[in-house]
Image 1 (cartoon, rainbow, N blue to C red):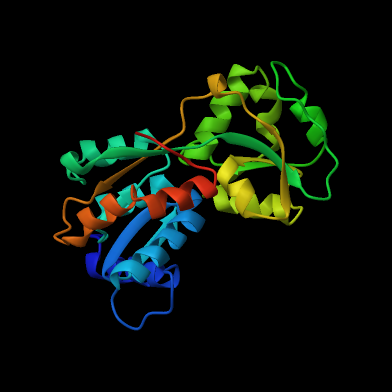
Image 2: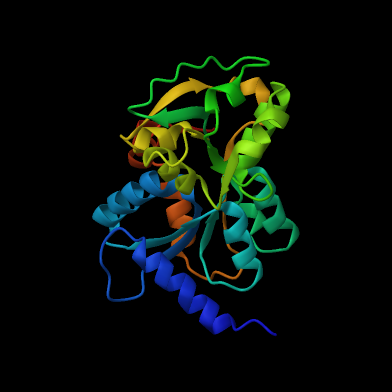
Length: 258
C-alpha cells in the first residue's frame, strides 16, 4: 500500500508539538527530529533560543533509526540530529540531508546504571560477571539491531567478553529513554545508557562507566534535512554552538566537539 505522506506528516507534527518547549496552538517555526537522548538538552536550548529570538522550535524525539526511516518515508522536518554516525550516514546515502550542513556536534559516554535503591557494586573490566550480577533480572538498553545505544552496548560487552552470557537477559527497547525508565521503575535491575541520560533521571545512579576503548566513539551528528526550505534551520544549527547552547550541553554532560 503506498504511504500516505500527508497522514505521516501530520502524525510527526503532532508528536513534535507534544514534545515542544511550550504549549503551542500554531505550527512551530522549526521542527527537529532528534535522538531521544537529546531531549533534556535540546528542550532547554530551544527555550533559550525562543527567549533570544521569539522563534519556537519543536521536536520529535525517538531512536535515530526510527527518525531516519521516517525521513526516508517523507516525514517533514527541518533538522536531523542522530545519536550515531551510522544513521546520519544512512540519511546522507539516501539523499535526505544537505551534505554541506552536516557536522559532528557532540560526544557522550556509555554507563552502567541501577536504581537509586539498588546496592550493586560492579567494576567494568574484561570478563566481569555482569550476568551473575543480574541473576534472573533483566538488563535494559536499546535494541542492538537498530538503536545506537544498544549497538554501543553490544560492542562494549563483546569487547569485554561478556556479551554471550548477558544476551539472554537483555531487554532491548525502542530508544534509550525507555531503557532509562525501565531501570528507574525497577523493571530492569541494570541498564546501559548514555551518561547524559543517567544525569537526567534522579531515580537512577551510575554504577560504573565503560572505558572509551570498548566501543566506537559516541558521536552525535546534525544536519539540515534536504527537503527543508526553512531559513531558520541554518540559524538553529549555528545556535547549537552558541555560548548559551554550549553551557546547556556541557551542564547535561555532553562534550561539544570542535
